[in-house]
Image (cartoon, rainbow, N blue to C red; front, side, top):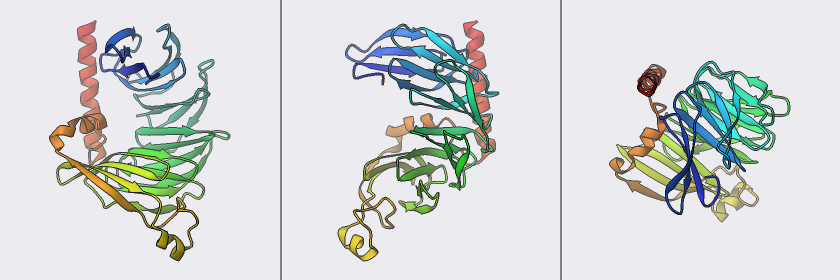
Length: 296
């Protein structure tokens, strides 16, 4: 969302569209990508989009003009982070690239993942990345060197978020894990293992987990802060993020058929084997080629 009145979407039709939420109308189209728009990130009047055409583009929301095209990846771009000062892109070529939004130059190439990099988050001078190799990596944006290498999941990292204290990661192995950002140590697992985890998100001391259990999509809300008696027994001051005991506040279950959009959003990342995942990507690429042929 660009602001309270505007939303921006990216599509397989290769365009981005700017929407007026009050009227529900499309106010402009941003045209320039040659394949599906996989991801986008907004900051101020600028939106950065990543595409299966291997490029990222910086756009002005107000004018609809493409300000710069970022070229360098050798395969599709699946994730973008943008804080106004830096742009990070994650690709199927296993690398993460850091770009300047001011002149479009590539400032660094971060290598270490061995498969698709599909999860990114930037916060101050720290970048956290998650890959289909199951690893989570914490990077310094000052030195562009890895701080921690976490063997997080047995398969794809499907979601992650971090703050000043902790990293929370979810994977297609059905597990949610909490890590200490400073040390890289595993604090504990959150929730019982599921069939797959679609999304994790937290704010302050509450964490929401969207997962698949016994063929249904379940939403769990967890509280990071342990009960007061456990604070006293464990010597934890003020419910630290490193507390060893977490309990769910409540669970919400919905019929799987009502939440099929979650599986669509994963776009193959829920596959249990990399071979299946790569086949899903290949099918997407074939669809894109056919669409482009029709457009041409």
